[in-house]
Picture 1: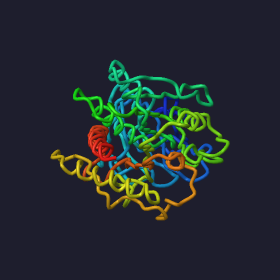
Picture 2: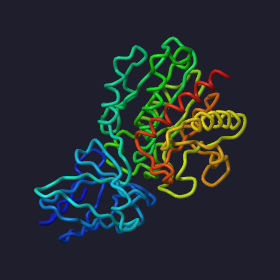
Picture 3: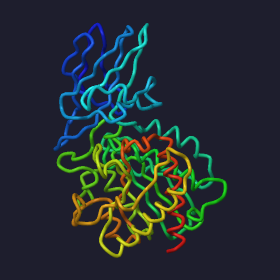
Length: 373
């Protein structure tokens, strides 16, 4: 963590998910870069707060790559509720401006819209009283934080569905989608999934990375999503492997966000595997495409299976030691990753709200898929 201050503005990152290195603060111009910590490759996540005592316009300039998204930074005045600052704030993909209120204001800024433990706790408080929902602890992290494990559905079921997220700490977008997915399954008209299956959700596979503000991707010597090996490095991956051992897993979907932006990275997509799981992923993808395209709301996120990535294409190579590979090797009927972008292409702009609605569509597609099994 690096702190810096001047009469005009002070910068801090001592909050959940905070990540920044301050290089200089000169009047109304702040030079910054993302903190890569134990990351082996260049990555783009940052998250900081700034306080200004007067109503000045401050220029925030990044010096290590293009790391400001197309809708400007995410911004919050309380560190909990976030929105996009907007294209008008952009000077370039390396810089943005913000005008602070007269009399003093603290604002939070982030590469993407964050999803921290306190967001999950706020969501869990809404569903905790539902008879289908139970909460436990998968394990404790290296820093002894409890790693939440949520189960939904029929506790006597002999078939299981897994959803995992945040193997890469900064990939927050799918966390909002998953809220919508579970809301849809828990709606008053009982879901056939929850009648026939027990669903397991681990929202933070890299709990420490999420709260500490790590990139998480390409962590040295390898990250959590390359840790499904004989002797795992991380407590959460070891605990998940043990927990899932012997369960009859029907579906396992590990949720991610892709690279920062551009081409496929601006749209949702499934990461395919070899046959016969390939054809099952294609079936689920087709159902999600069908359901999501039936929406009439203008800002709906619509999935198109043409964007799915085939095994052997680009970075999707065989022989990986990922969560999806673990479940596939363990005999899951369907196991894959699903990628949801940070920003979208602008048609529409991705927000927590429409990401939740995509989650509702995902729930419906999943219901149709498992009913056909």
